[in-house]
Image 1 (cartoon, rainbow, N blue to C red):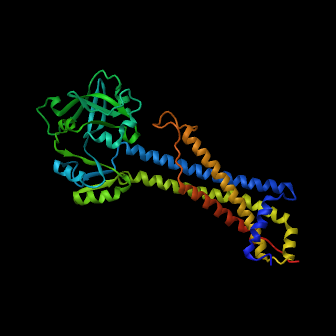
Image 2 (cartoon, rainbow, N blue to C red; image 1 turned 60 degrees about the vertical axis):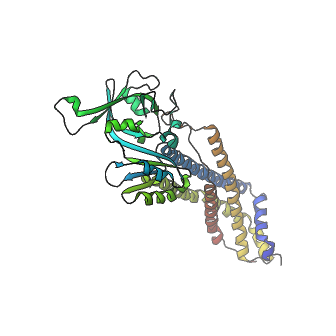
Image 3 (tube, rainbow, N blue to C red; image 1 turned 60 degrees about the horizontal axis):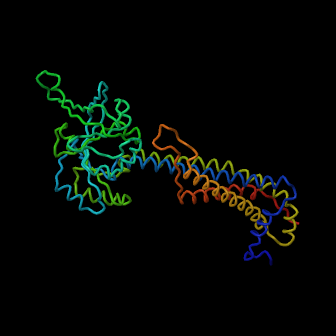
Length: 409
């Protein structure tokens, strides 16, 4: 009666087989090699997934430093009229923290003898607080986002534009001139074909190449060049709780009506964010395939154990154990090998991720706004790794167990 399920004798014997020294030393080595392989695979999965999380979150954070939580644009036309009443209506909505009117247009920049075409963006004062763009101005002596003071107009531009124009924002020696073509024509004098304004370069920011062509001005000053006072290309909204962006989007869409397009940050950059998500799932699929290939080492270990324990099998059969119980014993030992391996691997992988997060041993390079490769550990990835490796190990272990031939005494 010792074989009744309540005594769980299969697990006890499988545990003893795992811990006990085998009759041939080579089997011990194969068992520990199998554990090592499972550990390495598990560590690799959690490290790769954490690295992808870190890079994805960093990319999203970079866009947070320029793009709003919600952006309102006109369905038709480049600009639309704004008003104090509209601003008040939007600010009274729940979860709305910042309200920024922005106007954009392509302009010609000239600094000394250097010229570049750039995208002018005029913004209202809350832009700096909403985007926290000052975090991306760490290379400046002046790290404050200021677009004007004491009657003087300043401009903040991307580091890429500053380098092309030869601007040292820490010590500018002349004004930056901004030109806008006047398509109505003129009297034939060349200067009448352009409107222009001048501002002193105040500082630079560095996010990524997508924002490498921007020059920022005070909205009212930009209107002097564009001639669109009371107009905006977009209304940018910063939320108190970005996690409730969808709820706020619905409320704003109802307020603005069908003539306006309301998009969350994800929708503003949907292709990029969907690509990042797809990349993670494709990577996970590749890791699944690698896991299947790597864990086949456990099959070899299990075959060797079955051969080593032939006498034990004969004794168990003589005592009344069934074929199913015998097979479960060997399958459970393989399962134990997988569990031990994945636990060791998770501990190793998580430890390396924590060290990278704190000390940044692996560097990206000087051409990036971040120096060390970012990692971000998520509980879901730990569970995915645990379930994935143990499931693959359990399935592959069925191959030698099902092929096992048991001869009754």
